Every structure is written in structure tokens, then in C-alpha cells.
Length: 206
Ligand SMILES: CCCCCCCCCCCCCC(=O)SCCNC(=O)CCNC(=O)[C@H](O)C(C)(C)COP(=O)(O)OP(=O)(O)OC[C@H]1O[C@@H](n2cnc3c(N)ncnc32)[C@H](O)[C@@H]1OP(=O)(O)O
Image (tube, rainbow, N blue to C red):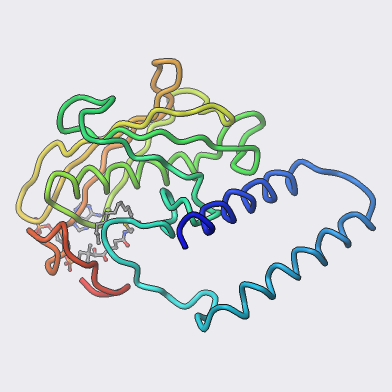
């Protein structure tokens, strides 16, 4: 049930955010931990999957995706717009809002999260352009602070292609100013070349 899972993930995001922000007596933390353990038992009873075992999810990125999955509490989530919706033709446009839990240097987003967003954006652009592939090289430039707590505009596009190599770029903007940008090389996965709409092979396959 997608809606229920998305609501649960949103609550867990709140929980993560508050866990980072809150201070209080040991007894409060103990009570909260007990209640979370009760929730964990409900979910544990409903799945045969082992935590940490690769799930090999499909294409396109779904509700459990690490960056855009509304059902994945680790995903901010990144909301992918339609091509041309807010970006230029051929661009992927996305919106993402980070929180306190994503803080790196005081008051700004952690550079690793910034890189993850850019990595996802170039992957999306390559796939949208018909060349789904894996990032083999990502160069990130951090131009100014990327804030959290406000929606960030993300733009990406395929720039070029040479054989299996796809070149793409992406930026994160806030208030119309670029805070970080990236250039990337991706390599199309043999099994997926010309098959962007198909199922992704399991982890480790190429
Ligand atoms: C699966 C994707 C589906 C779509 C999902 C979109 C979802 C949305 C976004 C999701 C975002 C998720 C984002 C993520 O999380 S992507 C996950 C992070 N990336 C990886 O895990 C990739 C790890 N690498 C590999 O698995 C292999 O390298 C693969 C399988 C990709 C290629 O190994 P394979 O043995 O098949 O190919 P090859 O070695 O002959 O190389 C081929 C060509 O590439 C050139 N080369 C290699 N390395 C580099 C380099 N560092 N700089 C420049 N060039 C490089 C190489 O010289 C050669 O060129 P040429 O000699 O032919 O000219």
C-alpha cells in the first residue's frame, strides 16, 4: 500500500529530524526508544527480507529509491518533474528539501548529500535521454553554501555520448544561484542499452 508506506516514511523522516534536534532527560530517550522498538517489531513481523541484503529493485526508481523514493525514509525525497516542466527541453528538473539531519558544516548541507543529489540527477538525465548507465566519474564543484530547510532546484542533462560513455552535467540552485554543480561520466550497462523502460538487472550484474 503505497500511500501508507509514504506516510510512514514521512513520519520516520520527522523522527530522524527530531532525534537530531532534541535534547532532554534520559528517561524521555528511553521511552521514545521503547516505542520505536514496538514499531520495528510490527515491520519485522511483516517481512521475510533480511536487512542489508540487496533487494535488486527495478527501473524506473520506485517508492523505495534512495534519493526519490517517497517510501524510503532516507530519501529526502527528491521530486522529479517532467522534462521541460521547469527546466529547458531535454533537462531533468527536480526539487529536493534537505533537513537538519543532512547538515555538514554548521548551517549548510553536507557535501556528501549534495554529491548524492547531483549523482542521482545525472543518472536520471542519462536514463531520460535513453542511455541508462552507472556513474564511473563524478566531479563536484561546491560554489557556495547549499542550504537545508528550503526547496532546492536541481537541473541535469545529457551533454554528449561516445560509445557506451555518456557525459552529463547537473546543478543545484537556490534563489536562482548555483550552489553546486557536477560533471559526470556514466557507462551504459550492456544489458540495459536501448532498454530504458525495462527491468533493471540485480545488483552486481552489468
Ligand atoms: C543501472 C542503471 C540504471 C539506470 C538507473 C537510473 C536511476 C536514476 C539515477 C540513479 C543514480 C544512481 C547512481 C549510482 O549510484 S551509480 C553507482 C556508482 N557507480 C558504480 O557502482 C559503478 C562502478 N563501476 C562499474 O560497475 C563498472 O565500471 C561498469 C559496469 C560501470 C563498467 O564496467 P565495464 O567493464 O562494463 O566497462 P569498462 O571498464 O570497459 O569501461 C567502459 C568505458 O568507460 C570508461 N571508464 C571506466 N571508468 C571510467 C572512469 N572512472 N572515468 C572515465 N572513463 C571511465 C572506460 O575507459 C571505457 O571506455 P572506452 O575504453 O570504451 O573508451
